[in-house]
Image (cartoon, one colour):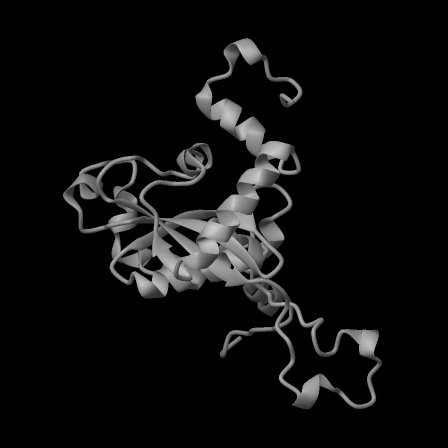
Length: 214
């Protein structure tokens, strides 16, 4: 089924792929996902891909099929952060209170995947990431990385901003798209009260400062 408002006569190959991925419960994608997830489970938790599984999504997020760009696939365990208590029992709390397994991690699993790849590939810079598959136990993400030392990257004015020293480990400082979502900051109208960060705005509103001699 084609997404509303899109004419089939003007759709290119990437647009067809995008529309296919919109319907994740369709027979085609359910079958492909089942086969791919089985294959991903046999591979290491972090491994390099020869090409992106979703080229349309990867290109929208900045990927180019040229030297200096790398794609890694990551497997992350699903679920919440279980509280480390003996036998999973918190005395005096109802079992349905979520005191053991209802503790939510602040950042998303996609951000966790970016962090793990960034630590494994310290010489590369994390550009972006996207979801590819999931089963009952794992979620699988593909992370786009860029080599800041490659001459093709350094000479490209569209991407050589990532070669700056301040762009090291963007994923660990909440500067990627997934990281910014976890921080709760944004751009534009309505987000001014969260800039430069929620903590900074809270501190400014809840502290009083005077000049020493007044």
